[in-house]
Length: 117
Length: 112
Image 1 (cartoon, one colour):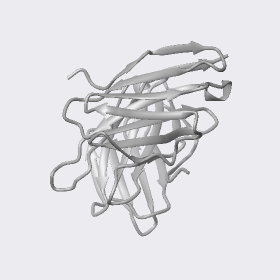
Image 2: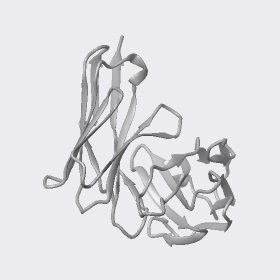
Image 3: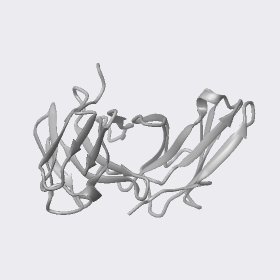
Image 4: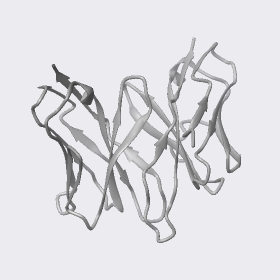
């Protein structure tokens, strides 16, 4: 498997523009996570899905942020309108829950470095 | 809010020395995991320890877990320059979800 694939790797956009980040999880994984990493705030969990259903979105900072998972192999994180303070590295990760309830590790993508100017 | 807090924030050692990093957390957990992040890259899973385990080994890594103190430690023995990275602990906050919460990390520098 190619691992978790994120696109684009880098995104530079102007304030007020819409930004869409994309993620393809590892095939067969039933959990998908979106994180944001900044120097000031570290790694923040924004939202996670289980079997394509959003379970916890309490980390989404504002209504400008939205995430979708239309199927098991694709998820998007959208920011609209974007602001300079949204500049960060956004990571997508996926994991698998074993049938007997044992939680496994999360596999991370390489991240999308977003710069809003 | 962050569940895990790593200590120290930064650590600098000579190649061949051992490196110890600590993690404290606040609520009960299902398991605790350690990850490594090289500069500009995604996080890579190192080791997982379950709440009913006290110690676990993987190669040069040794992890301990003390649930009474809500703390864990990661020991890297015989460190190498390639171990230079940031290390994060992640806790699974409850038994009903999989919302991994990461601490701020420890930046380890191994000098040749």
